Length: 61
Image 1 (tube, rainbow, N blue to C red):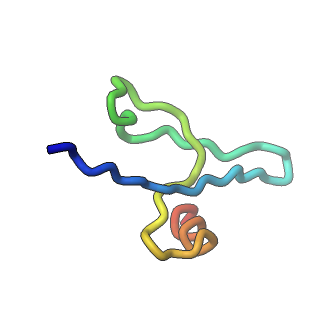
Image 2: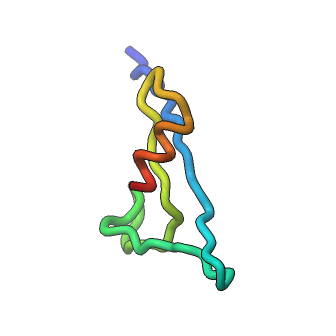
């Protein structure tokens, strides 16, 4: 039997301050299949039925 494919949708944000500096975050855990943490921008997965603006605000918070 073939495993079910699950589509996961996410949101990301480039956040810049008045000095034109961007916010970047060092991930606490590596991406799946990775061996070391990597730099990323704020964001995350959207819950099913959740509006994108709400998801993005939640992830930035």
